[in-house]
Amino acid sequence: MEIVWFKRDLRVHDHAPLAAACASGRPVLPLYVVEPELWAQPDASGRQYGFVADSLIDLDRSLAARGGRLVLRVGEAVAVLDDLHRRHGLTAIHAHQETGTLWSFARDRAVRRWARAAGVPMIETQQHGVWRAHGNRDGWAARWEGLMRAPRVPAPASIPMADVAGDPLPDATALGLAPDPCNRQPGGRREGLALLKSFLGERGRPYRRAMSAPDSAADHCSRLSPHLALGTISMREAAQAALAARQRWKAADDVTFVRAIDSFISRLHWHCHFIQKLEDAPWLEARCLHPAYDALPAHDEERLAAWAEGRTGWPFVDACMRSLAATGWLNFRMRAMVMAVASYHLRLDWRQSGAVLARLFTDYEPGIHWSQVQMQSGTTGTNIPRIYNPVKQGFDQDPDGRFIRRWVPELAALKAPLVHEPWKAGADLAYPAPLVNHEDAARAAKAAITAIRRDPAHAGPARAIVQRHGSRRAGLPDTTRRRKSAGEDRQGQLDL
Image (cartoon, rainbow, N blue to C red; front, side, top):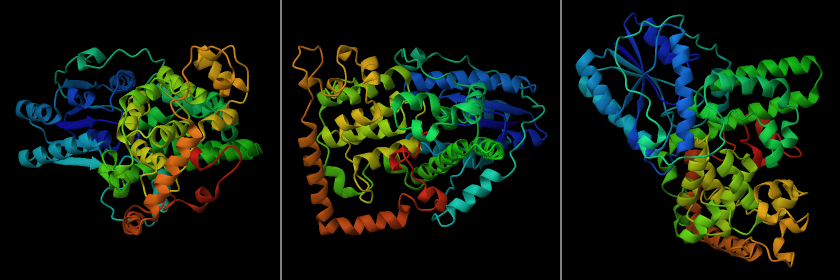
């Protein structure tokens, strides 16, 4: 019996492990393991599980259309596989490589050790533009382009299903996950394909100018990020659909849409580029990339709670955090801002605030998330610190205050510009004063980072980091390096 172990690849199309198992001539068991320990991790949440559950139901439909079904088992992965091997005899385990957290990294190593000891071949296939144990990033962009342009793996016409019983899909509370009223995106491949079609067909035209502001970005970004994170569509599918749409809009002489799709494709590059960083350094979620910055955070539980709940006293920051809590999504520039405010202005430990954001993001992708958390916290030692002004960002991205008034109803009576600085209104508002003076806090943060960077001991590790991981733009094609326009700066690079 051939196992196809689904993890973050919840589809039947462009799925090499499923195709290989079906071609073996043996009975096939499409398997998903619901792992209670995974859902007990500090970066896990009910909204993420809800998206997974939607996607598993849709995956089961796709398998059923081909004579198969998805078998669920609840438990620890090694124990589940060992039980299946003892009862049915496994001839191989097929799976995609996963670049995840330290927990999933340890889980996968344990499964590989068990498979070797049990004499069961484990065949892991590259899923997207991330290369395992490659050694360096020379030629990364060319490899990525080649992989994205390669033919997709067809979905099998039929699945020779093994007769094995499964467990029912547990609800979130059974896994210890708190009820989540989030109005998140629904999961499943059909939802992902609909988003891809609408983005490349019409929604994406104003993408480049719309991506920076949270209101417009919600409508005109692709919103594919959770589908790419869970693999309901493959990166190659998205890239090839974008290239085909680019040709159509170029033939129609729609320069605006062509440039929008160019920007989208560049973000698909960045998606894999940042996951490659975590593949190369799996410990990024746990310690500073540059050790000199370990002494910076001065953790404060009350400040963390105020920031997480949208009670900082900075209206635009609070609106972003409340919107994220309610919807499960925030555009990338605002993600960068709220993380920078937590690390620079509030001096919070990036590991704690990063875990808060991970739980809030329906589209949590560890490879992108932890690389970006460190970049926006100034702990890499190689990137120029970006200390956002939380008031100026409100004026820039929400000039009339509409987004603020929607998510911070305490300020609904204030018009711009006072809605951005309610402490100047002279009114008795049911809204907190700022936790700190943002200008003083920014100066203090900049001084602390400058002192570290001026220390001669800083240079050695920084050079080693560049040699080991490359610069931010290492391995990216020249068009991606040079692309910059109004509304599309270096902090907008991951808006999908």
